[in-house]
Image 1: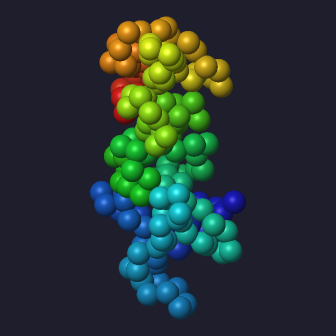
Image 2: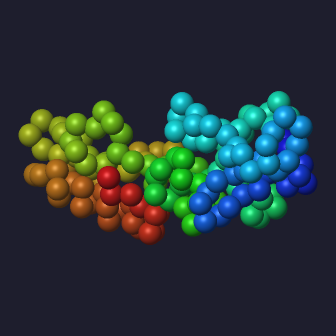
Length: 158
C-alpha cells in the first residue's frame, strides 16, 4: 500500500469538488486532474505502479489512514466530494446500493411470486423474509421499514 506521506507528496485533494490533482513532478504538469473513469464508474489512478480508486485516496488525504470500505452516499461512483463519502462496513455500503437493473418489480427488495409480492432484505450475509403482500407498494413499504431500521438515514429506497 502507498503511504500517506507518499500520497501527500504527489496529490492534492479538493474536498469541495472531489477532484484530485497532481503536484509538480517529472512528466506531469502541476494541477492536472489525476485519474480517469474506470469501467465500473469509479475514478481510478495509477501511482508508483499501483492502481487505486480516487475515493480511497481522498479518504487517506483527509483522515490520514486507509479505510476499510467507502460509501458514496448519493450512489454516484465518480462523485468524490468529501460530503459524499463516508467510511462504511460492507453491510452498510450494501444498504445504500441502488435497485438492481434486472429488477422486474420496480421496487428494491420486492419480487413477484404468483399473484402476490414478496418483500425481503439482505442483512449480515443472510436474506430476511419480510412477508407476502397484495401489492408491490405494500411489499416495498415493508422493505423500507426494515432498511431504515438497519441502515438509518443511508437506506436507499430505489
